Amino acid sequence: MVTIKDISRECGVSPATVSKALNGYDEISPETVELVKRTASKLNYMPNAAARLLKTNKSHNIGVLFVDDTMSGLTHEFFSRILNSVKEEAEANGYDITFISNNIGKQKMSFLQHCRYRNCDGVVIASVDFQNPEVLELVKSEYPVVTIDYSFDNSSSIVSDNQEGSYRLASYLAEQGHRKIAFIHGERTLVTQKRIRGFNRAMKEYGIETPSEYFVEARYHDAESVRRATAQLLDLEVPPTAIMYPDDFSFIGGQTEITERGLNIPEDISVCGYDGINLSRILNPQLTTWFQDADRIGKESVRKLVESIEGTSVAEQIMVSGKFLSGNSVRKWEGE
Image (cartoon, rainbow, N blue to C red):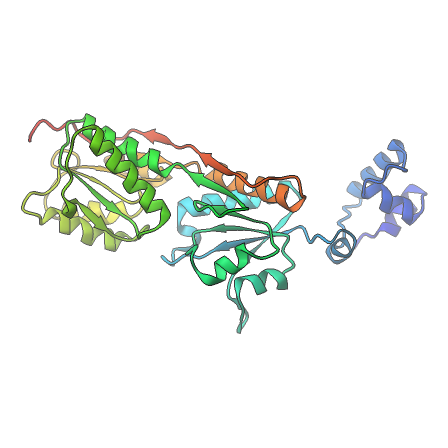
């Protein structure tokens, strides 16, 4: 492993000069700083993490708290895109990432204990029960945190415009003549509440009364629960002519149920997804959906967290816009 002494010998300067040049001290001339940095790069020098922690009181390690109740892990395309963006942006800012959990080997610990154990400088929190006492403990702790799709006082959040996305999809169905529009939504979270709010806003604007049985709860990213919800809607005495789904992936369950009943999309029933993942573009028919900018969500979460860690940030909520993606899964409805 290359050390500061190796660089000092190569440059013909003292180890102290090398250290000051690498750490931005003003007393070192620009020419010497350039020489030291060029030599360090040539020798593939990497600073010792433990030494850097002692010197700066920063580990340059960001914790990521991601609890996946669907057990789909990184196969969950929307969240995997967020996490990949978090990783890339962290690395671009000189930080590593550590996944925070309740386990270190066989030892149980709280999320906060795990952060302290790993010497995290701050934490990005996504896809959790934000009312979980352990999550609240972490949010109220000494650690800077940035939350995704949930807001706390005194910390920054990055939120996707879920109300607008749901509103736009529901409005599009109404514009196509549909008046019997059902909504299969996910679990009762803040995200779901915003989507229901957007749906109801569209229905009110178009003068559509939606019976309570047209609202069915399923689970996000769970094709089987969405298949059952679809069956429940299709078994109604007056079934809907259009269904909005909680996400593109879980729509596969709905598509299976519709197809097995001998129905065709969009001739017999129109459908919309949510998220705009790659899958939605290759389904047949191509799915009409709402694209969530997962890459920007991840990037903004790290940017705000690094600012908080370095003391240059004020708490704020950043809204990340999405966009409507047209497909072939909705037809103009001319019936009742």
